[in-house]
Image (cartoon, rainbow, N blue to C red; front, side):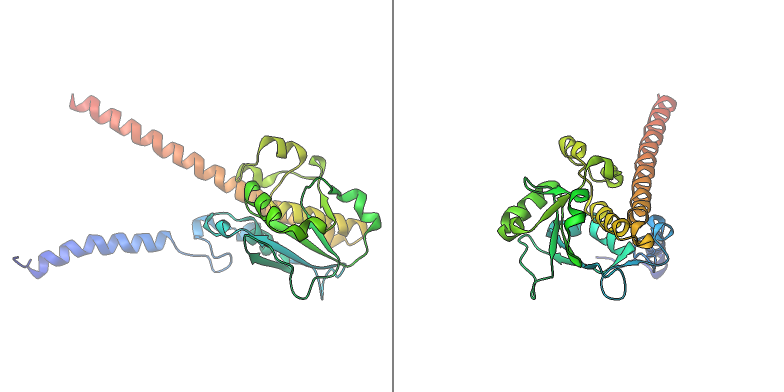
Length: 251
C-alpha cells in the first residue's frame, strides 16, 4: 500500500481533530452537578441543602432509598435529584432490598400498598425520630422490588393523596394514568412531600419547604426536557424543508 505524503496525512487528520475538539467542548461537564454544561441543573439547586439526621432535622433519623439497578441507565434519575437538595439520603442499589445492619430505628415506608395510610392520618401517632424508606425505579420495577422483600410488608407504610402532590416529574417519567389519579409521583417528590409534612407538623419552617425546594429542581428538569423535545422537532422540520427545497431546485 502506497503511503500518503505527510502533508496529505495532516490534511486528513485536521478535520478529525477539529471534530473531536468540538465534541469535547460540546460535552463540557459542570463541576457542580456533573452534567453537560448545556444541561446544567445548578440554577435549580438550593445553595444550602436541607439536612436530616444528626446536625439537622433530627426527627428524621435518615432516609434510605433502594434503587433498582436499571435506573443508572436513565438520563434523569429521581434519587440523585433528591440528593442534590437533601442531605442524609442513603441510596442502595439492589433488586431485592434487605434489612440494613444494624436495623434503622422506627422505619416508615413511603409506598402505596393495600394497608398504607395517608400521611396526614399517621402523623399524630408517629413516634419520632423515624427512618424513611423508599423504593426508586419504574412503577413496575418498584412493584417487583416490594414483592421480592417480604419484610417491607411488615413496615408501617404511608402514601400521599393527589391533593398533596404536584406531579412535577410525571412529564419526564410517565406513570400509568390510574396511579397518577391516585397521587403517584416520583420518588424524589414523594420523599420531599413526606419530609415537608413532618416539618410542618413539628413546626420546622426550613424543613417544611422541602417539597418546594425539590419541586423547583424537578420542574426545572421537566422544562429542560420539553425544550429538548421542541428543539428536536424543529431540527426535523428544518431537515425536511431542506430536502424538499433541494428536490424542487434539481427537478
